[in-house]
Length: 103
Image (cartoon, rainbow, N blue to C red; front, side, top):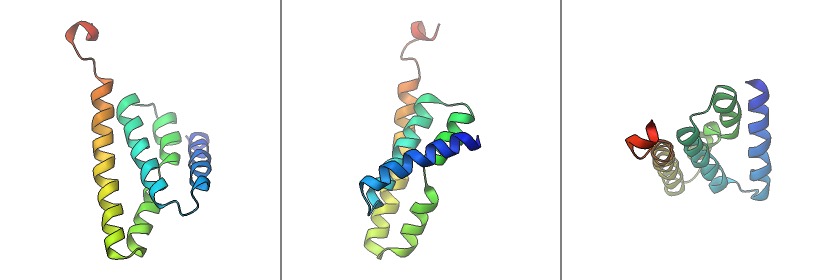
């Protein structure tokens, strides 16, 4: 899992360097990671490892604690609601749509 976390962290770093401010990039990364967890239901290497290293909820929490109140509230709401909705969407897309497909 450690190798997977390193892969995920490098992927996150590459995306964050495209937007040095990184605030909304971090929100998007967390939302994408939650979507992939719901959609793919990955094994430990891909889930805890790669996606665990890719997402960064500690950076989200640090941003919420240090930003002005209005910005912190919008980042917190976007992250929490976005991540929950993304996981539900991924989970919904992962499930078979009919009994015929389930068989």
